Image (cartoon, rainbow, N blue to C red; front, side, top):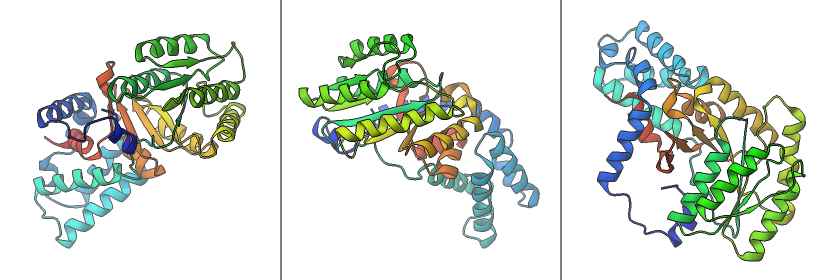
Length: 325
């Protein structure tokens, strides 16, 4: 179930997921991170900490960097763990040190974490990212969860007016989710499409508007400027909107994904990351790099093709799935 904050409480029982269901979700996450965990476990095992010396911390740094945790975050994590072991606050026991490492990684991944904000009426979400990251599919899955699980009415704005296939793909998802689709002619101004979608949502009393944008390389300055213009158009309709700007990042791209998040966040404020294709990479540490280096929380993760494989990001479960034996 998508983590939706205050609006969710009006439509969904406050009961937490049954323990059996949570175990099933954790198992799926652990399986999806198998490549990353295998790469890490070759270096990070309880035996690594049997003898604590300078080589221990060097090997730990190397393993985390290879998993794309990123150099700054890796350095901070290892320095903290080393200090705690030397100070005696963490026992120099292999299992204890490994468990503490998992806790520290979970803390790093929790940076700025907050549910997706759907408190406004209508709440406006804007999805950004480069081509091929699963952006349009993510929008469709989010719309489905909002509509079918939360009982919210959703309007989709086909703001990718440069690629006809994007609008067609979004139309299929709109039909599947029971959402309304607002689209323009090929090559139309994406800001105008967003404007029309918000106007339609307000007129119909819809709960959520999700605005798709054209996939663009983070090196394309003119298209990055266009994102800022789309945001300005949205804000003219609703001053505080968009209430959430989410960037779709392909986990398999590793550090390139980190660079994408950095450049996009310099063009427009980014509230969170949707980390897709986490099941197909040994670079699962990228979630830590994004949170630790940029302070942008990962809010959703994609661990497969099905609707259920788009999940809220749980830092503790993620760290445990990445390292726990």
